[in-house]
Amino acid sequence: MNDKMRAEFLSGSSKKTAVKSFVKTNAETALKTKPKGYDGGHPDIGLLRLRRFTVGTKLTDAEILDAQVLRRVADLFSALHPFIACLNRIVLPDPDDEDGEDEDDSEDDDEEEEAESEQDEESGAEASDT
Image 1 (cartoon, rainbow, N blue to C red):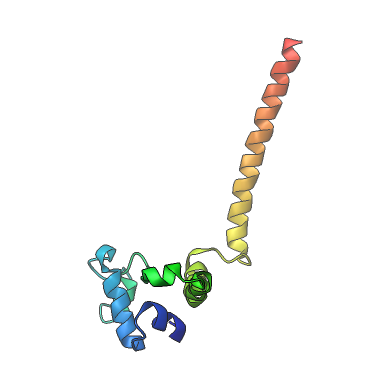
Image 2 (cartoon, rainbow, N blue to C red):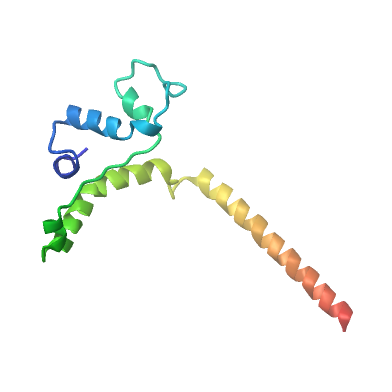
């Protein structure tokens, strides 16, 4: 968690306090027990139990009405960029992963074959009508 994100979204607290606050904020949907394969004494067990990862901040009316509101919002998104990039690395497949590509390609091939088969059937039906 970078300093800019802690400053903007977690009141500038220390890393340890920020992690505790983050876990508390997202605790509503957390697992009741430790995830399978992890020791209950794992140093990051609080984070490992989370099912969602959300952060937020409140903007005052004055901030929203300020002429520089777009700059403020851009700064907030900039602070979130490393967090979003980390989440994307976790949940999105690596494009260089050959196994993932093979699975996707085989599904695409199956869909293409189905579409071709349907087209052939339609062509055959049209030919028999003439």
